[in-house]
Amino acid sequence: MTDLVARAHALADDLLFPAATEVDLKGEIPSSHFDALAAEGLYGLAAPTEAGGPGAGLPEIVQILETLAGGCLTTTFTWLQHHGLVAALTAAGAADNAELRDRYLPSLISGELKAGAAFAAVIPTPPKLRAERVDGGYLLDGEAPFVSGWGIIDVLQLSARDGDTVVGAIIDPVAGEQLEVQPLDLVAAQGTSTVHLGFTRYFLPDDRVYAKTPHADFVAGNTFASRLNGCAPLGLAARAARLIEDLGKADVAAGIRAEIDAVRGRLDAALADPPSLPAARAAGAELAFRAAGALVAANGSTSVLVGRHPQRLVREATFLLVAASRPEIKSGLLELFSRD
Image (tube, rainbow, N blue to C red; front, top):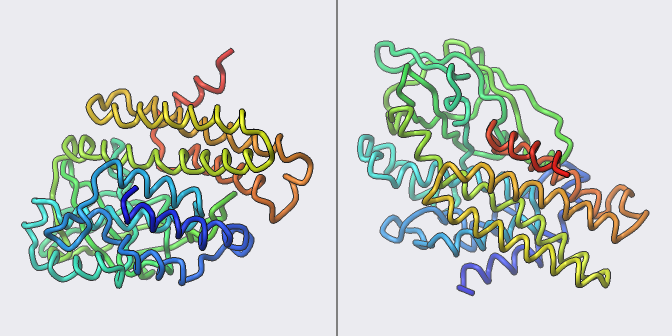
């Protein structure tokens, strides 16, 4: 276990998990949670050493994400959005706007600035968020259906489609006449402060654009991010296994852990075989849902009481059935749920 992973374990067990029920009940994440993540250098997790980050490899990143998700999914899911912008600005393509990179990257790595992300709207065809080229920038029209961290983040990583080109930009998360914000009520993880954004002739100036990427390349480039999104269900399942073991059901916990290891292996292998990734993601989400259900059964009737971990984990597992999902993952889940 590396030092960074050890610090993540300490944060999850000593800070995040003990407060997870209160975070769930209040629907609000204490700012001290984000301060602690920044103090441990975890806001720069996606950055290479030459940019001031830890230069963490895949196994280390996976361990950290799973561990934190098992501590408090609400906090972890909100924090996780940040790393897309860090990764984008450290990529070679960010050299197209070195001024933007130099302006934001150091503060993003330190956690002084916190970022959100809104890029899924450009993946389907037709896209949900369109960009029209005009003098000096773009006009944006459409929607970003689920954007987490509103009121928490300082900047928003935004993607919009101009024909077959994905325009990546940084905008200020501020509502206005051209940017309508609608808060969403979620079954779980309400503290993520997730909103629906509506864009109407929203002007995006050229100096806020960090990349222009062919749509096919953008979709292909999301394989790594999709693999990392598979960490949260496994982290939740691992926490359920720990709680089940605490109830004296070591054999059940061991079975869940064995399944976690198997799904993790499938997710890692899918990096070299992207078509297999949706099935692996579906397997992870289904396992989290089943593990949370096993915890309810092992714990008994008090599981349904407000403020108890079992019912919270079931609701969070429900959230993870659709969070960061795609049609192929949905199909995989339906197949798993309908099998004999």
